Structure formats: C-alpha cells, structure tokens
Image 1 (tube, rainbow, N blue to C red):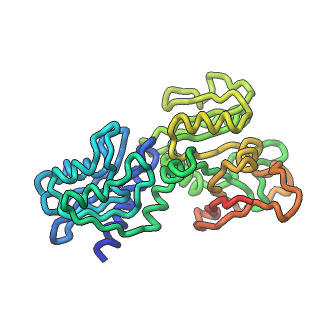
Image 2 (cartoon, one colour):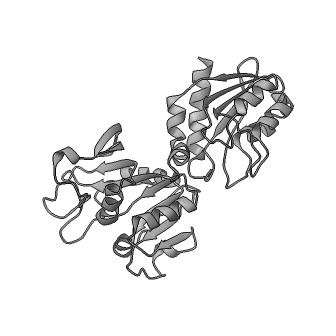
Image 3 (cartoon, one colour):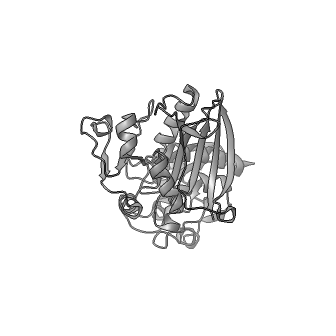
Length: 331
C-alpha cells in the first residue's frame, strides 16, 4: 500500500516535469520518514535548476533525510555529468533505504543501485508500468536515439481536417482545444509545416502554462518573419527542407525528449510513412463534411496486409469530442 501511494505521488510529479526536464528525464523523488509520512519531494525542472529530483528532495528535507526512505521514479544516477552523482548525495544525506521504479538504461548513468548497496543502503526495485509510461519519452530517446514523436490531429467524424474551401477553425470544441494546451506544455518542441504556418498562422504557445516549447517550422515555402510563430515568446527553428531525415536530425541534435507534431496531412503523413511517428492522438468532433482535406494520405500502402498497426491506449471525452490515444506499432 505504501509503495502504491508513493508511486501515485511520483506519477503526479513526473507529469509536472514533462516539457521542462529535457535533455534529462522527468524524474521525481519523495522522502518518507519511518512512519511513512512524506517529508519532502521534488521533480527535475531544468528551467529552475540543474539539480536532479533526488537532490531537490534532499535539500528540502535537510537533516530529516537521515534514516529516511527515498522513493524515486528512476534509478539514481551514479556518474558525474552536469551535476555530481545523485548516489553520492543520497549516501551523504544518510538515507537508509531507496526504492526505485525504473532501471536506468543509460550505460553511463546506470549502476546507481549497486553503488548504494555497496554503501550499506537498503535498495529495492519495484517496477511500475505507470512510472515507466510517464517517463517514456526519455526512455524512448535512450533506446532509439531520437525523441518520442506524437502526432496530434483534430478531425471530423469522417476524418476531415478542413472543408473544401480550406476553412478549418474550429473543428473541435473548446474543451478539446484546452486539452491540447496541456499536450503542448508537456512537449519540448512542436513541429508544423510551412503550409500550416502560412494558412493558420498559429502561435503554439501553451495557454495557461509557463512552458515554452521550441517551435519547429519545416518546409520549403517562405513564412514571413511577421508571423506569430516567429515572435519572441519562444525559440523557433526553421528547417528549410522537406527532408524527413534532416528534420529528425535537427530534433535529435537538440536533445528533445518529446516532440508534438501539429503538422497538416502532407508532413504528418510523410513522418508516419517513414516510421517516425510513435504515438497518434486524434480529437474527433461530432461533425461530418463529406468532402475536404483528409488528415492522412500518401502512406505508400496499396494492400491491406501492409497496414500500419495501432494500439489504443486510452479514450476520453471532451465536450462532444472524443480523444483517442494510440501507440503506432508499425507494419
């Protein structure tokens, strides 16, 4: 029961770390006394400090850390990077026990659990699918070498993203559009094509959030510098090419954990066809157009056997709209 409750608390902290921890993982940590009451907690937020979650919690707890239990979403790091190893800070603080949810896959940082054991600290590894999921963007980057790519689409019931005359605002309702603001705030960067930049003139700054994801404009059309995507409220990178490998290289070189794709059918479909979309989020409005622009096209598929397999993660209702979240399993 204690571990379940502690992990639920860590999950909420990891959510807060999404979009503000890159290039590091959105780790969270909490310190509990011998009575299993919370002493202090923290999550990694590079916009405030380079300190890792464990160090933030330890600094808050102070002397109360001695003899306490540290519960952390990811195995504490054992290497010298931008900051000293968290394992040494844990040892120095006098922590008696460490419980962690996800093993560190990074060969440079791994081995923290063994170092703590060698120092006489009791260490337990209790796996958590939920904490692995909420930290999946960084884990995906460690595994594949590139950020997690999430394509967000707003469509009618018949899969249209615009009417025949090009009008597209607004297909979904205000509740869905508000949920998108959270998606943006949880992402390190947002990708759009030059056509989307020209037609919609989006700002891409998450309303009601402090997060400022980097805006990526990809394509060969010229977007005037007066467009909202080039204002000073966030950084903007122009990838003046239709090359998917070139775009992915930019995103990888920047060290992003999670990238939200808000591109139209051309760029979104090209990313999907190239196998670079990892998750698909569809907001489907209770509307039908019968004609207009489809949200996906030109995937290079001519027979059913070559279909792209999706796994449904969740379904939620926002006003009259339905949000479906899928993992792309590939062909």
